[in-house]
Length: 370
Image (cartoon, rainbow, N blue to C red; front, side):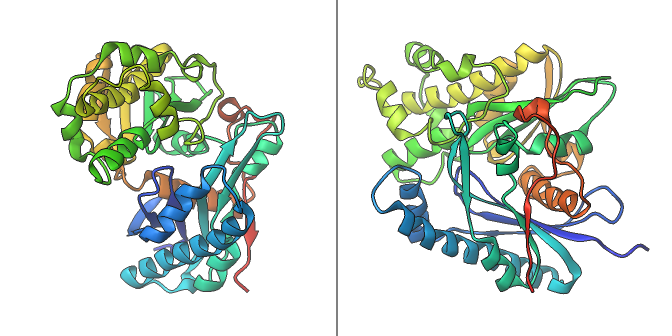
């Protein structure tokens, strides 16, 4: 039996619903899932991160402190995972840390993206080398810096006989299109995933999320409001493209609702869920009318979302990545373990056709534990 090649992927997405630490063995060349641990984000830290995502005063001081705090939280997730799996830090080659995005604005004249979660702190607290800052090299090459997971999807999920779509529904939704018998992979952010439906139920009912979309299903979608939101220029923008909570947030939603303040809250929630489903389906159908879709991310657990999406994509067989052997909750964490492995082996990890970068490149920077 070959010696394990352990890597850990750390992921905290737009939803900020927790830090996922995923242990992966790449000894066979294919990622073997070993175990995972989710670290909740303390309320005070979550509020600080949410505040930092909006322009405000004293940002540099707050960002510096949150950078360290998030690094400590990520390290805690890793150490809990190692204890859970009875694995020594010496047995792990490297950690791939996504960090917590606090700004993603690649379309400015001088585009940039910013993730915090000090990699030096993670390395010192865990005793493991950390690969981080994956996005900015791609932006330096003229790309969007996102999405990065399509390169992983291509390596792991490509099937020559059929068109496949890997759909990740986190705070923002993104798709990877793997066409049958073709080499070029496409991928981009379709728009809101869970972020608006989560934000609205948090505001109105003080619940973290709409379990199984039950509240959305209790309402009736409002066609005029849906059409109004779908008219946003992002949805007709050609790819490569990426977006985030800088654009689709509660402030944006309040502007959309200005002329629709007579609508019941449950009807608004239903319409927001339809916004997610329609923007995904419109983009998928524009690429191909038939194929297979495998969903990952938190949206895969939303029964109402999956049901509505299936109706909008009648030519597709819809399932989750569990059907391909990977739990939908851990796909992105595994992807960042894979990105760390690619860096360690000096292999490129971006897809210029996806991000718009001028060439392939090795992503990330190494932060040594010693």
